[in-house]
Image (cartoon, rainbow, N blue to C red):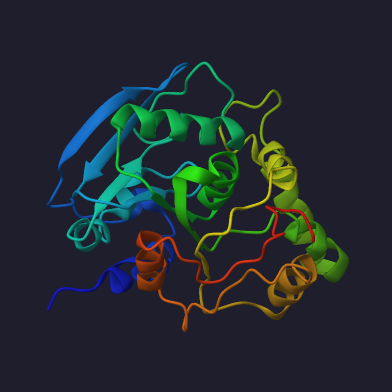
Length: 273
């Protein structure tokens, strides 16, 4: 029996979190590939692949510097139901680093240009994993009329690390400080990883999210400190849905019906309400 759209998309957490090193992973080819091309988005070119057909279009955004191919295990079942887009952001996978800065806001604009060039059916259900979730949030805040649903998979809140600084002590705090130094990247910045801090600030300043179906998926294993800092960071934003109760099939269905599963009128990307 073929898996439902729910089962296919819900596997995102299992598949992506299981690949600690994309370079070492054995990623199968997606057997139903429809079209792969390099698209000029102005200031650069993005390699992309379109699968399936119909509306809505599922847009899959990879984690930081990760190639689009790591979505291959979940693409076929989703593409049996509707259109799916995977792509490599500037400087990732097969996409060359373009003339524009590789921060999140530019990546969101590049995605809009890519979707317009491909003329894929709206609305879009935007799925972002890890760093890709920040791009998904920026895209949704910039183009709310185009987005019918938003799914964030293990996407870190932009204030989490600062909240961890307030909670952690001793060796744990030293480890965190070392991570923060590593995340600063090069100066001047070149790749999207170098722009992590700038992208986080862009998310903080972004416009409110529209009233659309919204789901957050996180892995089942969390340390006590991670839970505490997440709670401290998001204490005024009740936007995390219970993935065991809210299925992605509901997101897909409600997107098609233009209905809202769970939302708050004044929810902002990165801004406390």
